Image (cartoon, rainbow, N blue to C red; front, top):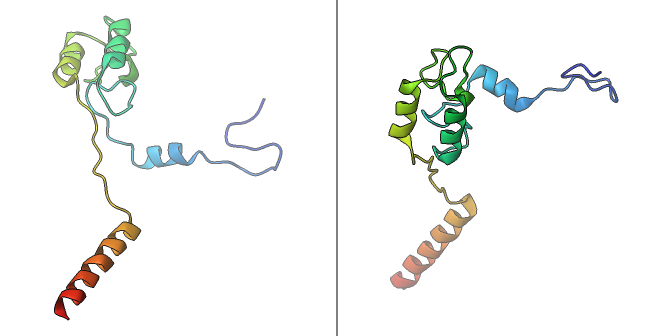
Length: 114
């Protein structure tokens, strides 16, 4: 059996970079997002209802949003208040696109001056 983090073929240690970053600065979670996929949807509802009335040892993935160790009506209310939320990302143009747009604008301005 292999030891986690050790490669028996090369003899070098391996690091799960994502896990290391999560240990240093965990990504923020959104209330209701049990599967942490960036939205609160039917799959999160299914996770919570499958674990509803768990009285101890509950985790975020099970629907324990208030982190009190159980999945109860308070967690259900938290999910329903956020149902339909989705994480939106701002689209940022690539530097090449900005360079092309700037070059075109400069060309138009120079042509107008002549």
